[in-house]
Amino acid sequence: MGKSGKEPLVYLAGAVENAPDSGKKWREELSRFLTGELGHRVFNPCLEENHVLTPEEFRHFREWKRDNLPRFRQVVHKIIHTDLTTLIERVDYIICLWDQYVLNGGGTQGELTMAFWHRIPVYMVTTIPLEQMSSWIIGCTTEIFPDFEQLKAHLRQIYRPESGGGIRQ
Image (cartoon, rainbow, N blue to C red):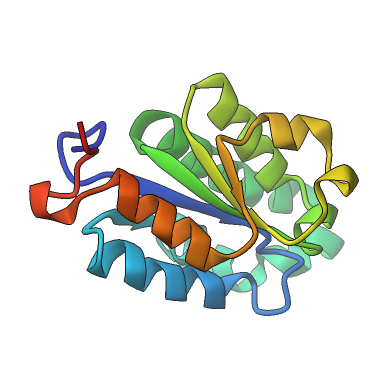
């Protein structure tokens, strides 16, 4: 069981703003594994924006970055607040895709730092050589994997769906 007494909740961290598909494809594919095979709940920030923002904010906030910086900040503050509150209060672990697109952002770096500070495990998938990565970011991780298949194998060892999706004792 997770923090909430329910199935574990996993946060999917990685590039959104700078990713070609807004980071949707890998999150959708991994969510099917996490919910289907492990029975875990998923916090996908790509989907959560729809619930946090008003329809007007969702339609316009990216253009407000250029045209209305104070309004843009208000909207981004809502997203940051929701993401970090969820992370700190509800999330049991994080899966992070660390790729070339995350390097121009800041949210993932902040989320991993908060996870470290609150002792939330971070499982990272990256093909970037470790010697090219930030020492700070590496220090925030629990495990690093070269691909999603090895991550999935690791998660299968830790979590047993037959015991309700909880952590194996």
